[in-house]
Length: 191
Image 1 (cartoon, rainbow, N blue to C red):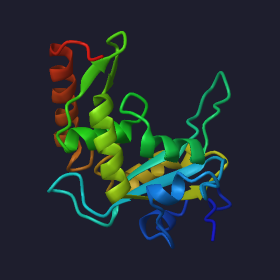
Image 2 (image 1 turned 30 degrees about the vertical axis):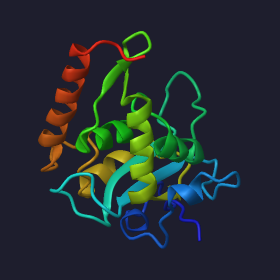
Image 3 (image 1 turned 90 degrees about the horizontal axis):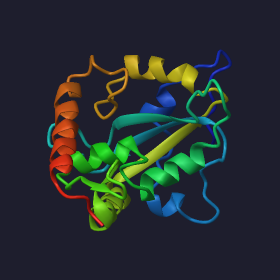
Image 4 (image 1 turned 180 degrees about the vertical axis):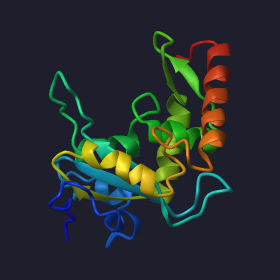
C-alpha cells in the first residue's frame, strides 16, 4: 500500500510514525527499487539506535525530496534520496553525517578540503551499519516542503537538526557534529 499526503497537502504523521511497512537497504538498493521516483517525505527507524540515549525501533529522522528551490527545478526524488542515504557519503547526506558522528566515526576533509566524509573505510562501515539497522518508510507528496516544518514541530525527531531546537537531543547532537568538524579541520586532508 502506498501512502499519499492528505488532500490539504499535509502528510499524515501516522504513516511515518507507525508505517505499515519498513524497508531495508537490501530491499531498497535493488535494480527494481520499491521506492518511487516521485516527490515525498521519508522517515527513518533503527533496529539499534545510533546513540545509547535514543530508543530503538521508532521514527528518529524525517527528510524530504525534493527540497523547495525558488530559482530552479530539483532533480531529486524519494528513490534518489533514500538510496543515497543508504550508500552515499556524509558530504551529501546530513543523516549519514549525523549517524557517523553518533557512532564515533572519524570525519575527514577530502578532495580540495572543503568536503567532509568519513573516508572510504568509514563510509563503508556506516553503510554496513545502516544496512544492519536502518529501515525506511515514505509518503508520496507533490510538495513535501509544505509538511516538513509541521512534522518536525509535532514529532519527537532527535536526529533532525534544522527547525528542531525544541528537541531535547538537539544541543547534544549539534555539539557532537561541531566537534567532529573541528577535529576534521585540524587533521590533514585525506586522500
